[in-house]
Amino acid sequence: MHVRKQASVFLWAQWVIEAGLWFALMGLFRLLPIEWASGLGGWAMRQLGPLLSAHKTALINIKLVFPDLSAARSQKLALACWDNLGRIAGEFPHLNELRPFDEDGRVEVCGQEHLQAIIDSQKPAVLISGHFANWEVMAAAICQGGLPARVSFRHANNPWIDRSITRIRLAYGIPELSAKGGAGAKEMLEAMKLGQSVTFLNDQKFNQGIKANFFGQELKTAPGPARLALRFDAPILPVSIVRLPKARFRVNFHPPIQVSSHADRNLAIAETVEQINLFLEARIVRHPESWFWVHRRWPKETYKKPV
Image (tube, rainbow, N blue to C red; front, top):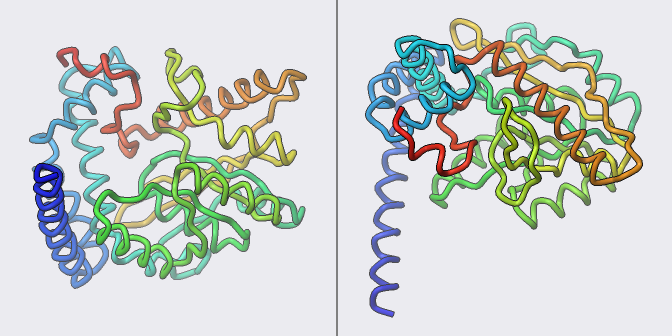
């Protein structure tokens, strides 16, 4: 009991320090114009990122996807990833300034006809994407585009930071959020029953998922989007985002992904997941500088090898 109480005290102290740093950074970024905040965040993470253990993770991931890339270019790509993550932090308190669909906003929207077709059908859809550029902007474009949608998200480990992030998301136009996990999955299911669309970032490892090909290897992948699409006979609408200069973005709504019509439901889910992964692969290859390379997407033993 004493050990458990001591561990709780240490965890609480860690949360206090993390939250103090978070609110100090958000306060600083909020005081700066968005372009300055984005630039400062990018510069800071280019200095800090290579010192973290996640830098090795990024280099291993890059080698797996681009085996012929030189060490120098791999380092440059990893730095670009850190730059992007720092810019996301700098832009976070300014998200309400981005305003997708506004003429004076900072977000171009392409392929809006694909989103409008879903809205006009008055039926729910499954929207999928990955951790590209500033994915927070992508969620705003979906919800502010006129499509009633519930957005999946992962809770931050620190409860104070988590509440802060949730408040910012609600303020810039994400009306309904569902945490990843069992309860969130039920909320997504109920949302689709009520005719709401749902959104997922489907490029990360999911230990309870099914094996699906991702850059030539069978990796555990979340089947939730495919299952919901098959259950509700709903289209899967892929979305991507590209970072432009000066804290501007382009959100792309792509043509729907073909949902498998295989008679065997398990095979239909697997084939649909493969199609989703192919879309994600294409986006990563096209804009590798803004993907979330620091995530351990491959099996644990992969990261025990030297870079």
